[in-house]
Image (cartoon, rainbow, N blue to C red; front, side, top):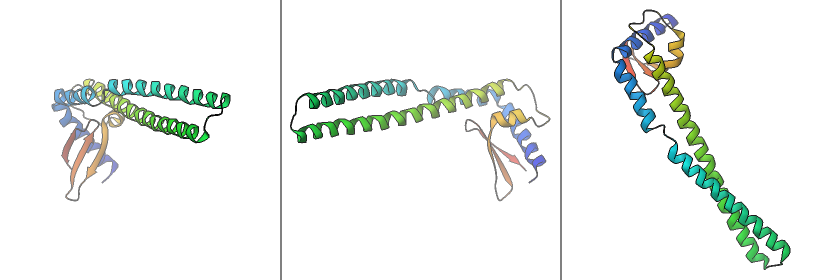
Length: 162
C-alpha cells in the first residue's frame, strides 16, 4: 500500500467518524470521566507518603535509641529489618501509584486532545491533514483480505475498504 492510499483511507475513516461525531465525542468524554480519574489514587498516594514519613521517624528513633542505650542487638536488628521491609514495600507501592497516575493523566490528555480536534472538524474532509492524523489516529491495520481497520485514539475503530 502506498503512502497516498493510506492517506486516502485515513480521510475516508475520518469522514465516517465525523458522520457520528456526537457519539465519537461522547465516547472519549465518558472514558475521561470513568477511566482517567486519579482522585482516589492521589488520595492513596498521600496516605502512603504519610506512612513512609511515620516509618522514617520510627527508624530514626530506633537508631537513636540504639546509639544511646545498648539494647539486645538481635531484637534491634529484627525491629530495624521489619521497618526497612515495610518502608521498601510502601516505597514500591508509591512508585506503582506514580506510574498509574501518570498513565491515566497521559490518557486523559490524549482523549482531551482528540475531543477538541473532533469538535473543530466541520463538514467532510477532502484532503489529508497531517495535524488531524497526529491528533486522532492511533494505528491502522491492513488485514490479509484487504480490509483496513483505522483505530482512532479513544478506541474508536472504523473499517474502510482499501
